[in-house]
Image 1 (tube, protein in one colour):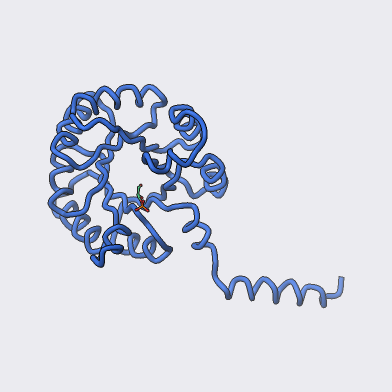
Image 2: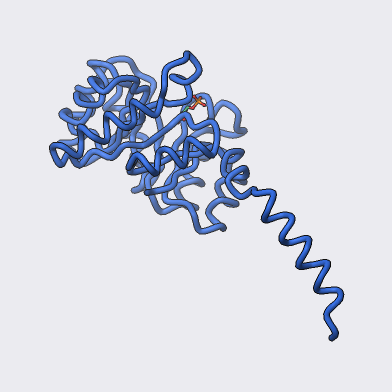
Length: 214
Ligand code: G3P
């Protein structure tokens, strides 16, 4: 399973990259709105830190506008992947971008039907938002399971990015389900490190080490 970070924060991306766990980055307008400086500069810096795909979202609502934005964003770096909303216009843009070899990530996917259409249109990635489904009392991970099953049934090459992750259990469930990618907020990555028995074990070894004759 590929491991992406879901942030536009340079420090967080540098820290995760230094851990050797990072295969890519996903950003969105909300995440970019938190950061200082022109967004294209931020994306450029992110692309210089991480070799894998860096998702950057288009904001136009018609396909022609999306394609123009995608072409501009693609100039930032070779590893930019264009995030496209799951709409009819969005899938027209995906279809066109595929023909000119620009990679796409169809975002705001909330049903298997949407994921089928995105794959048919030629998306490289689809992003089901599981946390937002959990928030409204639907089981987000069921959606990931359905999409992975459907794609596997037909050897579809579109990769599933489990997104809108809220906790480490989401990451574990995504891995068990066979999601190709998870995109994880920094705070959740920090939580993944933690286990009380690890902390207790380290303390005990440190205490006992003091008693060892040197
Ligand atoms: O990449 C975008 C997605 O992960 C959004 O997450 O927490 O805003 O639902 P959230």
